[in-house]
Image (cartoon, rainbow, N blue to C red):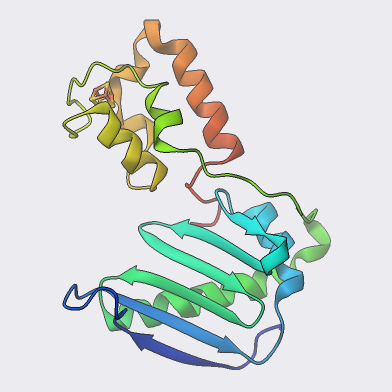
Length: 181
Ligand code: SF4
């Protein structure tokens, strides 16, 4: 097991007082830099910055960051959930490290698609069937992993087949919707 012990801190980010959202941070006693390329290979939508020994990832609505000696998560609804989330992330790192012989490490930087890139491929009718008032709002939520392509029923219409396949291609290559999350 790579990470056996760590110090956990749960707190309310000072930049967001009164928001009642929590962040949690695990300070590690071991350097997990070598795991980052394996996480980059398995966590869809992860953004890896090798020069900074950092990898960020959206898991559900949470912002996750892995650094050499630290794992952090934020935007969690309560203290207990923040602790559980962090424990799950430590497990994820340990499982990935144990499986590393089966994984081809990925040292490339993958960019998350921008809302505008997604927006241009939507039907652009603002029909509201997805529950959002505009296609652009839907695009923002899709890139933040708060919506799925299937939430836009209009995309199933034959005239949007090309747009749908382009969106599916983007989701396969750099979506925020995780293989692990
Ligand atoms: S259902 Fe699709 S086309 Fe309609 S508003 Fe939502 S994203 Fe736009």
